[in-house]
Amino acid sequence: MLLLRLFFTYVKIGTFSIGGGYAMIPLLEKELVKVNHWLTMDQLVDIIALSQMTPGPISINSATFIGYKLAGIPGSLVATGGMVLPPILMILLIARFFFRFQELPVLQAVFRGLRPMVVALILAAGVSFARNALIDVSSVVILVSALFGVTLLRFHPILVILLSGLVGLVIYLP
Image (cartoon, rainbow, N blue to C red; front, side, top):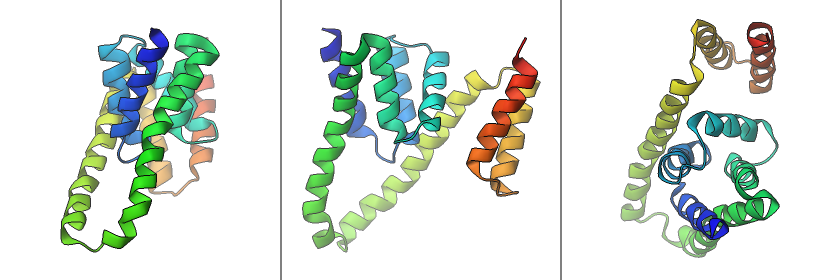
């Protein structure tokens, strides 16, 4: 029963994850933390962080990790399958028709409406993560420093990840 619920939960997430991995985080929070109570928000934040650091798309990595946590290898396979099935079907459908109809004003209007929604979902994910990640003054300093490093100093994201991890070791290791 868990595997079936896991599959259909990820089919739902995969169907409505317009905008990529970060845009799906509010859906993950709603379905996995609030509706099914399979994870705490802290666990979800940790899994998303791990998914971001490992090779591959964040959506597939997180589905694999969460599926494994809930039901071992079968859970990994089911969650990942549920996550990739809708986008594969959508891509096949879009590939068939998009280039033929991309210049239609109605289609262009739909995409103009979807772009800000994707930004909103990414910002919502950021706010949700901030509630759980910003636990003290040190975590706020790490956030501001990382943001400054990536946006203004144009540090490579890998360097920022490594430096933030090192700072975390120094500050938080007992």
